[in-house]
Image (tube, rainbow, N blue to C red):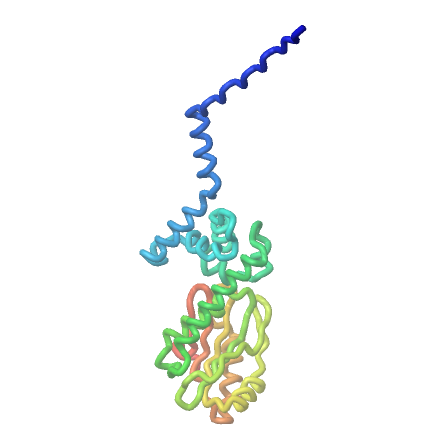
Length: 255
């Protein structure tokens, strides 16, 4: 007797992918590359073609942040930094601790911003090196403004010059509070002698933004000038720096 085994059923043919399914696959392939990649390329191209003048502050900030954050859309953070501090330069110069208060701004972001700030100061200072300070006055004021205008506390800086009025040294002598910094005329003159300086330019900032000299500023300047004069060291000027501009004691007839 022969056993009759049922014939195995053939597997149903595979269905061809539908057009909508293919479209979804293509869309997913494109989504694998984040949208901000193209944005970064376009922004860099715009910068290289037209420079920074035509770019708003937040886009320039995006370019800076690209190096610190490589796998995230940085536009929201760039806009937050500009809004929080009031502008590109203000954000770059902001204190580290305040930058870290901004959500999304970690140590790598702070480091990148401070690298840009340091590069700007180095470039501004380079324009003074090897040149008589008095004939490069605009460059000197630009450097002082870049270095001090946005500092949160008062700083007293001295530019030491040789007999040809070429910059020998640029030193911050003291740092104080938001509206005061102690100045010691004898220490300034002592340092000038150590450097063999023949002349000085005094510089300090007003964090309030108003560069108008105070009575204390005027009196302190006279004390430094008198101490320097006894050793035949000239005080060419005292410049007060604020976000609103700069003020020269010499131009005001105060020195």
